[in-house]
Length: 414
Image (spheres, rainbow, N blue to C red):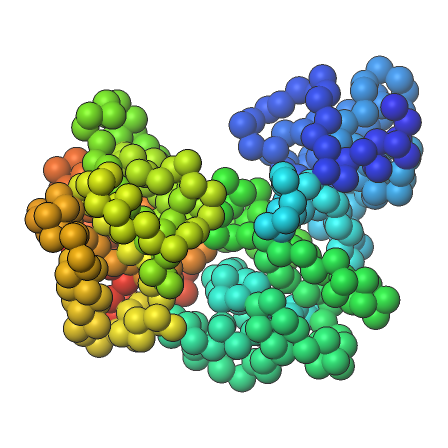
């Protein structure tokens, strides 16, 4: 395959290659020619081998992403190593709801990035604040202003629409270097308008455990915040690994059967933050075969007789939840509402007092915190020494410089 064809094939296709892999993680930045976890002199040697005909082209060997492998790629890698590169090309993991699978789509970003319209809900602005580049944020969406954790950090940032509907006129007037958006939605129409104005759309999901490490590392390279990013990743790995280690030997008979419910009183299937946490935290999702959400099939829930009920919320649905909550009154009321549904009083989860509510803000850009709450609820004996609030407090202090307050999960277990 020629270099030009390789560059085109990478759009949505993972190439199998014979390149050596030095670590489990692959840094998805063009220039990482040998497909390991960094860009260094080994990549120059590898690209030189491609030019000389002794190495095979890899997905990321076209360092300057111009469709061919030559000495310009060697020069690009050298500039990246010296932190003087004028651009970087990274892989995006794009998966709109209508797409059958994830597309690995490259995007070239000019450097340095001086201004960002952080339009990926609350998660994009929060990640930028965590990385210490809040001064680069020049626009946010309306939902970002609802998050108490970073309210003071973005209070002066203009709003340019919602997560899904942007005021393109305002964005074009602000002319950010980059628009940072979710990878879970199709913004192809907006991308064309932005590109015509010289603005780069970068799509990333910081809230999905399966792509967290790659997305955060790529952003760290783009913003020259690599050390900070490694601290974030280490925190996630430490707490997620602890949970994984403790539940990995459980038999199915030792795993509680869990019913997960969405913000809007809908029945969760296999997707959503709650559903995604059930299996890794040692539970069995009673509706794992359902894709997406549906109206609650009360009779089916009753017949499945879950041992645990997990209800997701955030402050639009239960105002007294998350960082700004001053008491548990509204969460208590919601639990009583669930328990008093017709026919649910004899359910094991209700009889045993195992109905729990958790705010999606506990997940945010730190799934390890969310999973700490869920693991404690599913297996209180296995996680006696784990205090989810302490884990959450440590993260807020370390990465946002604020004290924990509010109510993210209820009821908590000692």
